[in-house]
Image (tube, rainbow, N blue to C red; front, side, top):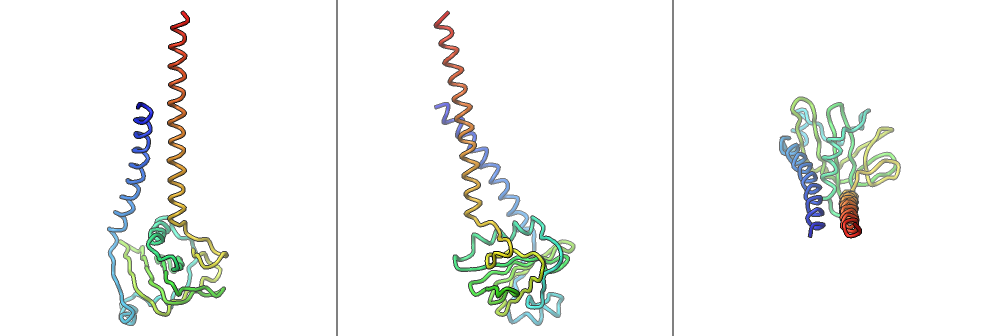
Length: 196
């Protein structure tokens, strides 16, 4: 019974830590304003300072962990046959494009895609639109995609689950080891009293 209580307490501690991380992630996503732009509004959007995605090229620099986590959040929602590409396209701009017809010909990502754009200037903003003629030329800069072995891919939700299982298994083994050490000590103490 005592072993079960110790194990339950350890599992609750790990689950609580994981839940707190998810709550922080969700709160960050809710704080960003969301604006949807349809394909027909692309010309209006470019006159308002938001360029159509076909004009973007990759930008020198790495993608911060915050935006990589945002991009990873979309992976579990993608259909099994959808592909994605994530890139930094400006000093303050990041994009994540995904779609079933998205492809990579060795130099350019192209196809129909839903494109999510984060702008980090000042308070930041988030835009999401459908682009029937999405193109992205990565050049020699870093992008994240599942379409080419030349570039890294984002971790999938399966990898996250396996990591969590490994952590829970390690905590479980640690709890069993500590409980076993306690039981051995208790038996030795009882045996020592009987011998005296």
